[in-house]
Image (cartoon, rainbow, N blue to C red; front, side, top):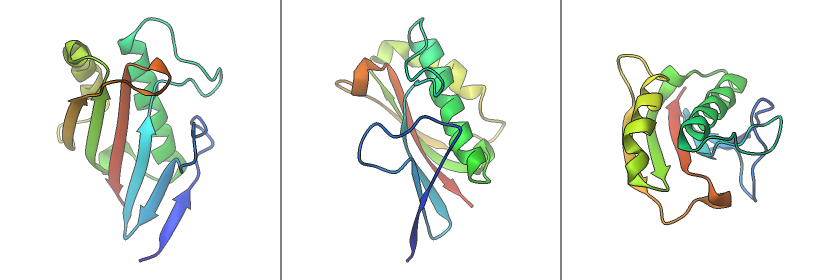
Amino acid sequence: MAKQVLQATSAPEPLGPYSVATEANGFVFVSGQVGINPETGSAPEGGVEPQTRQAMTNLRAILSDNGLTMDDIVKTTLFLASMADFPNVNTIYSEYFGGQPPARSTIQAGALPGGYLFEIEAIAAR
């Protein structure tokens, strides 16, 4: 099995010692994305909704930079700082997927890096 580290110029740089995405055996594993605006390096104002939109935009940019689309995602995991945000996050999430959304898990995390309110990781199939 050959593993390839993937790059993304349209999304924020990783916040630590990890790759934004790796590919192995036709699957692309995208590291968790929070609502960092790649142009400003900070979160958008306004709470979980704009953070969710930015994180989803970052995920789409990483895929696009590597020749994939949101339709190629087969599994996502969502991390929420509060399950009270689930209905709003769910509404925004649904805007990014068509009639056949990927499998998904959603959990409430004790805390997210940088105090962010939402994070998403994904697995796509090439």
